[in-house]
Image (cartoon, rainbow, N blue to C red):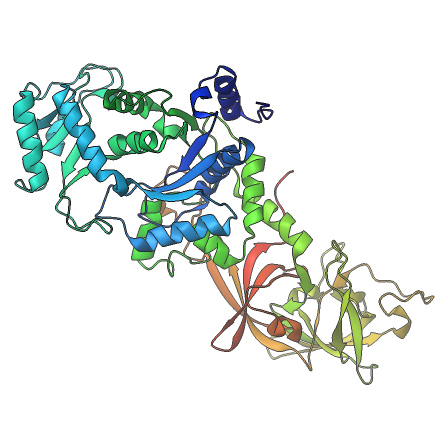
Length: 548
């Protein structure tokens, strides 16, 4: 078998195992899994895990199980299952099968009884707080439970009574019998099963005891024949328990190997489903798919191309150590993708009228669709009366100002060079209308000789055909990037959404909803229609602050 060249430490481990013949008995088949808990929507942090797992599947011609780790019925629901399946599909990944940890409840219970029979588990009556208090510290051993030495017969009887619903929530748990003096706190008789009289979204009321994650997860991997459990770094201390759980269940070799990688952390971005759910429940955002949310549903709704997310994760790479990625790098990947693929259009956020006094009639001008892909041109109307950005004109320009000023010239994109002759002001001294002269020989694309020059080019929208629009711009949900350890509630950005009125060329209104555009000198926006109203929703700004 010719092995692919390893591109990261995970693939290096896999190659070493394949060369050593570890999986020869199973035809060298590599099987990985992506196992989210269906208690919320996937966020951008999950994209890295998906890219790593699906990357291994593709490079080794293996298989991947999309498995819902649904062992906490109080927080799980089909809504989240469906959102996860949709997110994986949107990213362009194709799992080989969809599975559920709850598929294995009968098998997991059977293994738990085997633990009891082998002397590797016991029923404990201590409360959750008492178990925590007796677990010990990093420098002090834990205190054994007074119920640790119950007989096999008594443990089996009590566990079966737990399953039968005889006891209330919290009355008893099943604990592994490992080592209360282990330097790894996870090995100090962890809980394997707890009582929870809660209806499960798939199994209904069949069960009133549910397996803990650290028990169900490794056994689900082993049951499915997973070869590599690729997970984030916070599970590194759980690896000895992962191995112990599989070993004591008696699974034959080769058994799954857990390998940890650094999770994705991005500046000023919430990366916790628990906190994201809190934002949804408290109404800070409009839902899991709010365009400001880092969920995949939110990013999709915002108009972010899935290819840009995968490129971002590829650029970040697979690391062993914790690190934080600047959000500007993500924005840069999104911007690069849209720069190549999005059509160009013009819309004015803060319009002021400009009238070309010596222009008569009207005409159609050629406007380049996308200079990167060279998609050709389309026609735009020009009547001599247009709207420009208020910021593109200044009565008192700063040094090196390259836009329009009194007696100055500027080029109207794809049109003509104009010179400002006069300005009318309102009662407050604000510019109400700009009056200009145009120079016919400066028609865009024309090679006619002219002495008229302009240092800058500005966008515009024809006043006779302009469409009213709503323009939405977004900031991060969190502020104060320099205080990442501060409670997220103190960092919420209550000005994360800005809504303005503007003018847009009719081409935007005529385009399909969801189409991405580069609005000249403004940013990348997604076209939407809401209640018959044209809405331009920001995807990412034009300004790139990432140092490539």
